[in-house]
Length: 368
Figure 1 (cartoon, rainbow, N blue to C red):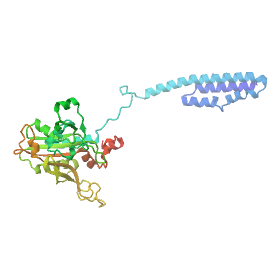
Figure 2 (cartoon, helix red, strand yellow; figure 1 turned 30 degrees about the vertical axis):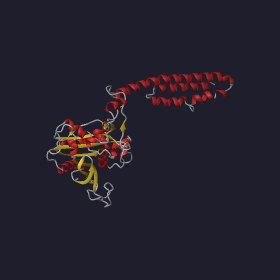
Figure 3 (cartoon, rainbow, N blue to C red; figure 1 turned 120 degrees about the vertical axis):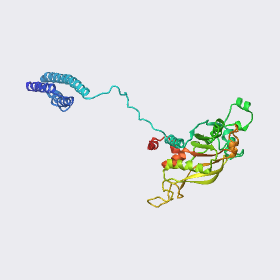
Figure 4 (cartoon, rainbow, N blue to C red; figure 1 turned 135 degrees about the vertical axis):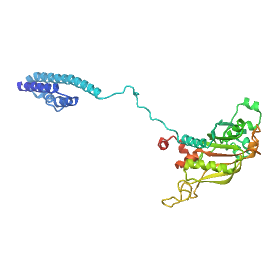
C-alpha cells in the first residue's frame, strides 16, 4: 500500500510543478489530458481501487481523490492566469479603431442599368441643346391622343391596349361625358409635347423621359417601361436636321463608326414619319460576324438595328396648341421617341427585356 501512496504523491508533485511552469493555455490543456485524462495514470489508479485488498482501498482512494481535486484546482487557477495574460497581449497587439461602426458597412449601391442608360441619353441630348422636362404619368385623353392628332378610331384608344383610370363620380358629374376628359395611364411621353408648347412660345427644344404603360407582356414588352421623347420646333427645320441630331446621338451611344438610315413609316403626330435604324455595331453593318463570317445574330444579317420612330411634326399638332403661337405656316419641327429598354438591350446584348425588372443581382451587377 505504501508504494501506491508514494506513487500518488510523486504524480501529484510532478504534475503540480508542470502546471505551475505552463506558459500557454494550449500547453496547460496538454498537461490536463496527460495527468487527468481518461488514459492518464492517476485516473487509472482510482479505477483500480476496487481490485485492492479491502484494508487498502480506503487510504488509496482517499489519497487519489485528493490528488485529482488538487490538480484540477491548480489547473483552473493557472488557466485563469494564462488566459488573462494572453488576452492582455492580444489587446496590446491588436489595434482597434473605436470610431468604426459596430457592424460591417453595407456595400455602396449602383445605378440600375435603365437609370444609367436614361442619364447617358439625357447627357447626349443636353449636349445638343435640349432641355429635360417631365409631366404626369396619369394623363388626360386629350393630351395622350387628341392633341397628338390621333384619329378617334385609332386602335391605341381601345381599352384592350390602354389602361384607363376610373374617375370619382363627383368628377364625372363636373366634366360631363366629354371623352377628352377621360384619364389614362400615359402610353407614351409624347403628351408632354403639347403641354410644353402651351407653356412656352417657340422656338423649343426638349426631351421628355419617363415611365409609360401599355397592355403588353412578353420578351420584348412589359406593361410598364420607359421612353424618351424629343421635340424641336423652329423656323426652317427640315428632315436633315432630324437625321443629323439622331446621327450624333447614335454615335455617342453606340460608337463613332455608326451610321443611321431613315425608313418611311406612319405615326399620327408626324408627317412625314420615319423609322430610324443604326448600323449594327457587332458586325460593323456588314451582316456577318468578323471572325467567323456567320450571320450576325444581333441584326439578323441585315446590318441595321431599329432604334426609334420619328418624323416632322404634323401641322395639325402645331395648329392645336391653344395659344396660337405655333403657326404651322411659320414654324416647323421634328419629333422622335425611343424606348430606354430598347437602347439598353441593344447596347448590352440583353435578349429579354424582363431581365431588367426581375431584380436578380447576378444580372444587374454586370452593369456597375
